[in-house]
Image (tube, rainbow, N blue to C red; front, side):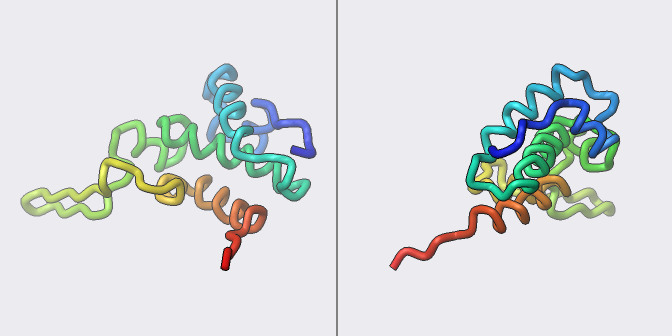
Length: 126
């Protein structure tokens, strides 16, 4: 990465929904997220990508103040269908087959994926 990795205060400044999350938890997720971004990323995109991926992980773990975090904390994230009369729930398969399916579960993951596609485009090999 060309920039200094973001710290917990950067994450809370960018995404205030995580203000109540313990600093040690934020720092751990930022460290994990930093492994997903390397020096090949565009300067400016790299720091934002780390913040987005960390926010994605935190949301999946049920942290934050948004609806997605509440659903994740309740174990309800990932439902593809829900009916009320004679209750019928349908969830995506329990095994995640691709990183993309995981990233699509949160707004932060979807934003990270958009940056990933710009910075790490697919390469066609003949």
